[in-house]
Length: 95
Image (cartoon, rainbow, N blue to C red; front, side, top):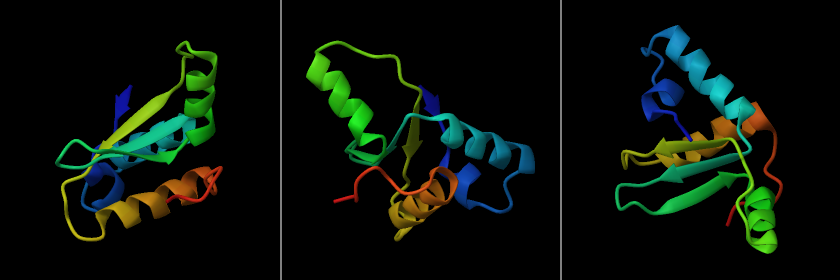
């Protein structure tokens, strides 16, 4: 599992190479999950692959990216927007 920092996604002062690495990790990912300060997980991208894993009852190798959120207002929405720009629309609308 890759961890992509929120700074690498949202902070324009972050070094360009870190920002590019973060975007490349998102592009390669099958599943993208954001985690808030209370350790709640939100699947931003890749719901069907996760459901298929549960359906077959065994783990399937998937490239997963974890994005820890810091709790700043509007941060989740910004991350979703960036993921959609990089990956295209989610397979299903987010709840």
